[in-house]
Length: 444
Image 1: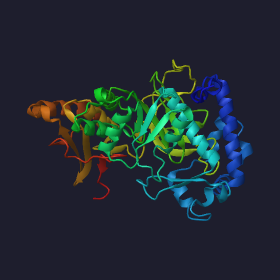
Image 2: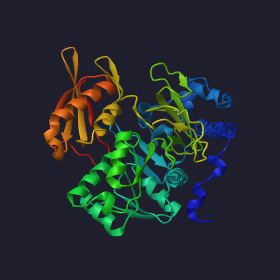
Image 3: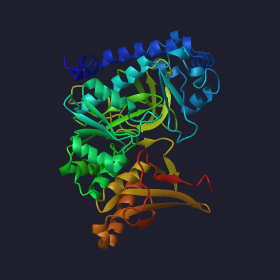
Image 4: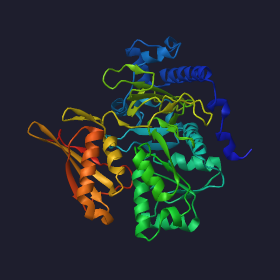
C-alpha cells in the first residue's frame, strides 16, 4: 500500500449515518471521562453543573454538558502547571509540542500536545489533503514563517505522511518564494487567501504569470475566510490557473473541515470532531439546513489539552445536500465558514457580516484585491467607510465602477457607504491574517 492510500478511509468516511453517530457518541463519552478524571478545570466545571460523565447516554444528552469558550481557556492558564494551567490533562513531562493562538482577540491561549496529539493533528490534515487530490507525486511548497503559531505546521507533516515532497519556504521573502516555486516546479502550496492573492500580485511584478509560468495545480487556503467566498475563490483560481480548496481549523480545536474535489460544500471531519450549530441570539440548537448559527465543537482525540463543547464563534450553516458525490458521509456545510459571530455587527440597524462586503468587492474585476472597511460614529449616527483600489487599466471608468459598487453594496448588504478610491497598491497588504474590517465605535 502506498503511504497516501490510507487517507481514503471508507471504514470511517463512508459509514452510514446511524453508525457514524454511534461512533461519535462513544468518542464523546471517552473524552468526557478522560477530562473528568485528569483535568481540574473540566472536573470543576462539570461538578458545578451537577454533571457526571455517566449522565451522557445519548447524543441529545450532550447538550447538557456546559460549553467552554476562549476566555475560560485563558483564565485557566493562571495556575500551575505553568504555562498551561488546570486544563492540562497529562503529566507535563508528556508534552512534546508547544503552540499558541495568534492573540488577535486578546491574551494568547497556550496549547500543549503530546506526541500522540500531534500525530492526530497531522492525521486530520492528511484526510483533507487527500480529499483535495494531493498525492505522492506532488511537490508541495510551504510559503509561511515557521513560528509558535500553529499556521501550516500540521499541513507540512500531513503532506509528508501522504508521501508528498515538502519544500519549506519559511525564511524566504515573497519574491524569493515565487522564484523558488518556479525553479523547482512546485505543484501545490498552502497559504491564507490574502497571501495567495498577494503572491500572485508579486509574481506579476516579477514579470511572471502564475497561471502560465508556474506549475501549481492545487492550492490549500486556510487561516481566514476567503476560499469560501465565491468571488475571492474565483480570483485566486484565475490568478493561479489552479484549483483552490478551503480548509478550516483553529489552534484550540485542530483541523475540523475540508472541501473534497466535488466542492459541494465543506465536509465536517466527523470521525475526529462533533460539530453542533446554535442560534447566535437564543442558543437553540440548529439541526436543519437554511439557518446560520455559531459552531460549538468537540475534539475527540486531543488528550493533553481537550476541547469539549467549545463555542468557536465560527458562523456556519448545514447544507441541504444529504450525501456528497465523492462518497463521503461526513455532513456538509453550505458556504463553509461565512464569518465569526463576534464579527457580525449591527450598523445602522442592519446586521452586517464582513464577508458580504468581500463578496461584493472581489466580484468586481476592475477593483484590486485589497480593501478596508472602517465603522465609526458621528453623534448618534453610524458611518461606514469603504476604501478600495482601482486597477490602473480601468481608472478612466471610475464613475461607472463606483455606480456598480454602490448598487451591489446596497443589494448585498442593505447599507450605504462612504466610498474612497485609492491608487492601486496603496492600501495595507498582509502576509497572514488580514485586518480589513475595523469597528472603531467602541473606542469612540
